[in-house]
Image (cartoon, rainbow, N blue to C red; front, side, top):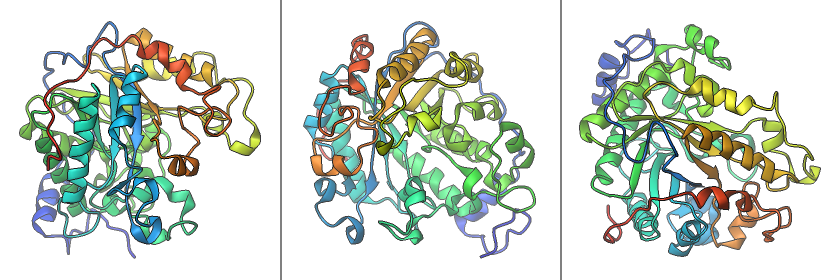
Length: 417
């Protein structure tokens, strides 16, 4: 199928397509203009100690043809998190859970809210609040982007490749629908005191399925290359700025988190320019060096943690910081089989603490042992031996989480949709 070219807009004049074409492609290809900065949000201080320290949960929508009816807990999303799972995270000392949440809206047309997914989200928010946890809602999948992009390398093994949907990077109508989903999410969480922010997209990856100025696959893996080559239709700078403005119009005080392209890589924050709206937080992910963080189970671990220079991570963070805009390390983590995993987590946390940057470690597990055995690489509660806490990453996080001084609270609102 021929890739969409911005010079050829025929066939896309639906309501969403027309709006996106008129407003989106008329915008310049460069970074957005700076927004007037608002007063610092109490959960996102610009100096001093960070207010939020926690962990990430990542979920996908159940597909019974692949997952059956009960695997991962039996809910509309898997794995399913119970009240006890959120309580355990809070009892460990965390005050934040990042919900990397799937398909609040449908992936394919017509793009509408999936009320079963919205109801499950409401229940999870209630449980997190009851545990005293703040929540960042991070939109993982939706119009034109399926959960399976995060499992791309496993296509045609435990799921068919047809489930990998990432056409959003060349489809203006899908981009517009994603923006509507973000606005809908902002309205759903309005007034909920436990909400610490809305992340507009988890790990945007236009380099994989977007196009360059010649309509060819983008693949711009260096920041300068991205700036020089990305086509307007695929440019996350334009897309995210448009969406951020829509969300800000719908909610005056909701913190809006935006990640850079190339899977939220810290180095790519340099391409984003000034924030497009007030109250924005830059959100980066860091899994470097990847040959360390993703070290396979059968290799028995790497004995010495390290990367290109002792202060390489700190240097990336320092380069990413922008005056007057909070920075958040939204994900970081490493394989549980590593023998010196405590050194990795201590180094990452120390660099964030010294700079007042909030952080969330990947991944807080569920109490469902059958699911956890199938997705165990980043289990924060297991060490090298399955189900055994000896040498687990969480031991390095307890002291940092103990510094948390604020907790979420409020009345229980059950199953809000």
